[in-house]
Amino acid sequence: MRAYFRAGRLGLRLEASAGAPLVAAGVQPFLMVTRLDDVADGGAASAQVSWRDGVLQNLLAKFTGASFKTDKLGVALYGIAGELNWSPANAAVSKLQWQSGAAQRVPLGASAISFRTQNKDFELLAPWHQPLLEGALNVEKLALQGMGSAQPKADFAGALEPINLAAM
Image 1: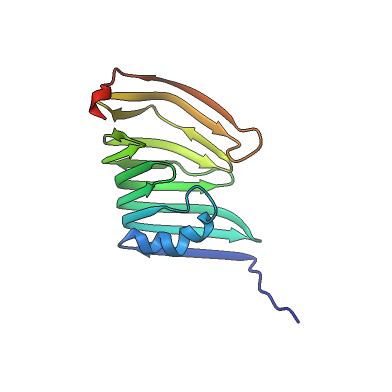
Image 2: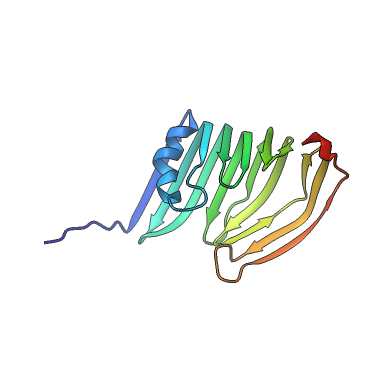
């Protein structure tokens, strides 16, 4: 005899004054066997997630002084604040800012980004200025479509201000 339960609708709200328990309980189980399975974090965070008929419908994550680090991807961000929204369609705007970070061995300065993530797509909604190596990366346009699919597409326009490699 088998018994199972399948909720038609399910909502979940997670809050943590320290982000590590939130990631360990709510996020890492979904990241196992991915390149993000070593994510470490801290700071305050909350998340609201809803499913309908077993399909993720939306995600809202809020951060206050959070940090995010994954050695496998070589990315770290510290002092993260803002909101991350995702849904299959008509997603709300996401806005995140951070105080510092690193991409591989390249130190990153404080920055803010406004974007939309829906379905398997990402779209930058305003120009993004990311200080690095005493210069900056200025991104005017960034659109990713079909992330995780067999034929993803990207549209990018940006420029690198003069940098100082000795600052690494």
